[in-house]
Length: 540
Image (cartoon, rainbow, N blue to C red; front, side, top):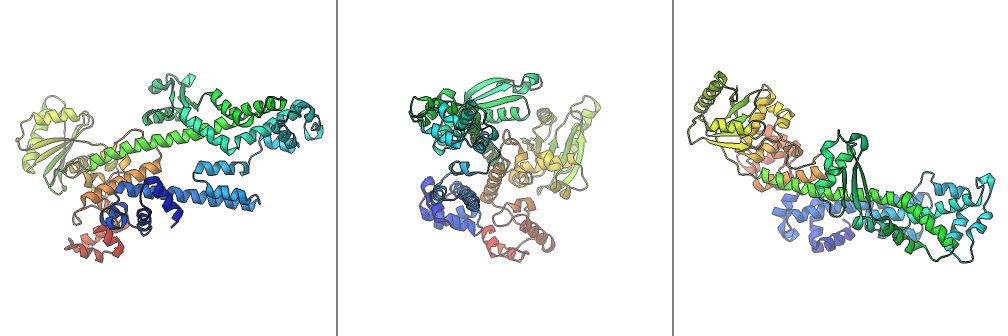
């Protein structure tokens, strides 16, 4: 455990060092976030789940920084470029961008214009000009470097090569990069324009055909929408601050006078900014603004998912579930109070005449036959019309009718989980069962679906998929462990999210239950294959 990391996180997140250390140690030992938050309060000083996750995520970031630092040191050492001063700077770097800026001048390069100029022997001329002495006349100095054998035919060619070298020095200057980075983030303007021959085809992005705004203020949904438009080939995007401001900063840094050499340096600065620095910084700000937009979008996902998962369950009721449809009809399933499928049928309530009368008769008959207590109706296509139909056919008033969010039901119905559970039924039956069970117990049913497919936010395919998965998994784990599970009825999918278990132990618990019957006590869980003391401690 790196004490530097502990103290850094302690300062950044305003926790005591011992609290951060306790969390790091518990995570290292395999404890989950909900377990630490609920059952190790005395060790962490009662840190909540949010604080523990922030510590966990920052530890991972700092470990990644250390890995990159080690790789850079190794590369420099192998190429015999590592000095004590350079090593000290690398070890002191606190961010990935700072580390990469220090490494940039030493990074193995493809042949650049500056590399070619060095091969022509023009670096001494570049150094002479960069000093900007009043005594130096660049054109006169260049005459000594004209060498047709090396490819320098004239004074102009010598000066151009010297400027290329100076431009690269400016681009690789750590302080210059930091100042440009700050300018881009604070004053960068994001501009979107339509791709000329794609205007009709890309009409859904018409709001961004002539759009610009400060990138620091742009909301996440607009950043993600514009990036999608660019990725699909309908928009051209650019992010830049006012060019005059950038050049003024660089000229203050590098231009030392008003002589002839200073004019050459000024020209090199303009080239360096337009050809190298601005492109590099634009890439960085694109990544930075995307990361910020991802974080905001993922936060909305997480909040919506949490609300959905923790919606009040109706409980153990006998339920009729309806997956609505117009042309293909409505699929009906009837479930007992444990969610077991009792029967299914299809009705066509949105046609006139005989089929409509048959639909009314079927619904009434099934409600009576299975003693239905509640009806769940999917909120997709034909949902409202189906709800109106059900409410108008004269069912007993004690049968409640509820619209249920059906997002992801079709994903579930075609999944391996659904096929395993209902091998003899088609996807329409499985989808309707999912709708009904969501009314009984939203959490137990929704954990069977990849959280991304539940439809709780926009741009789920545009944000960083690793970060999205981590955040949504954290949310599901948090909800499952906050509510708890009934070990004798919980599905394998629900048990997977219990602290300390995971897919293998969840499967083993269900198999043990199937062979030996219901668990008489929690201690009996220890008889389950591979469920050791540590897993039991967290799960129980």
